[in-house]
Amino acid sequence: MADRFDIFAKNLKITERIEEYLNNKITRLYRYLNDIEETRVDLSYVKSARSAADRQVAQITIRGRGYILRAEERSDDIFAAIDKAVDKMQQQISRLKGKRGNVRGDGTALSELAAELPELGEAEEASEIVRRKTFTLFPMDEYEAIEQMKLLGHENFFVFFDMNSNSVNVLYRRRDGDYGIIEPKLG
Image 1: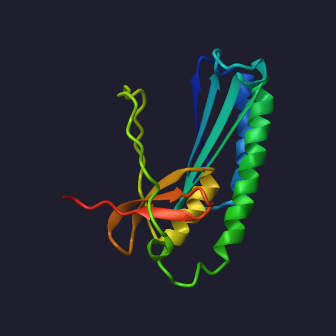
Image 2: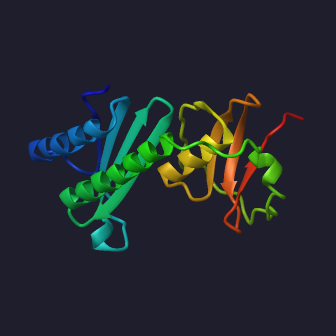
């Protein structure tokens, strides 16, 4: 269990008061899950946000054995943003704990259920890559990938390592609300 957490700030100074406040809020989350390996808190001030009520941003990411939970909230006050993010994280934790007891699916592969991939339009013009992310892939099946996608709050897609096919796949939500899987093959 990770007893400490990492705080990262962007365009914001972390005061002793903020650090103390975070310590009180984040340590409460450890009561609900005892297998937390890493906790990261990102706080930022976004000057370019359209609304002043969205300028203070708090994002909490928890990594555990086989799961990743993320909650992000915005407010005009950093303490309010932290409170909202912690509340959202508690909801995700209770959802995760509830899902662990349920049986997953009927054994039918989601790739068999997916009818067809959506049409991909041509790119209008080439864009510049402005952000690059890296993350650790944990082996999971398709049903666990759907759960992780929901828990992370990803609405469009989720990249995962399929333990049945030993390949990296992309799970995506179709327009009709169902899911599809892209199974890349080297040519």
